[in-house]
Image (tube, rainbow, N blue to C red; front, side):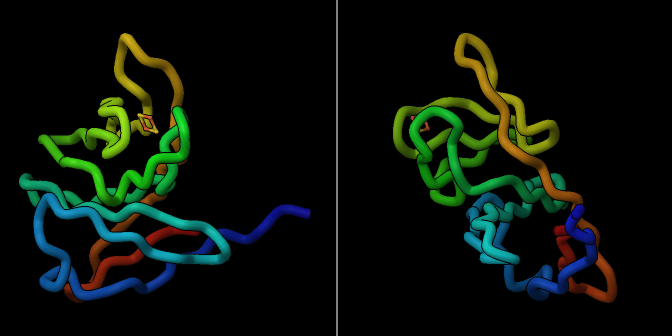
Amino acid sequence: MTATLEWNKIMKLADLPKQIGKEVHLKGKSIALFHLSNGDVRAIANSCPHQNGPLAEGIVSGEFVFCPLHDWKISLVTGEVQKPDNGCVEVYETQIKDDYIYIMV
Ligand code: FES
C-alpha cells in the first residue's frame, strides 16, 4: 500500500525567520524547514545521513545547510551531500499559499 501524499498547512511564512531552521513533525517524520535569504522555502528530512545530526539546527548559507554535528554541507534544493562527503536526504515539496507554508507529505 502506498501512502497518499497531501499538502499540509504548517505556519505563516512571516513567522519563519530567514536562515533559521525549524523542526516540524508531520506524519511521524521530523522535517527541517528553512526560509532562505532569496525568499524560497525548503523542507528536508531533519536527519543528517552521517550520524543523524539535527539539520534544523544547522547553519544556513545560500541554498545549503551545514550539519551542526560535523559540518557536512547539504543542498536544500536536491538533498545531496556535497563532496568530499556522500549521501542524500529526502526533500519535501513546499508551496506558499495565502501567506502560509505548505509541505507535501
Ligand atoms: S551527523 Fe551530520 S555531519 Fe555528522
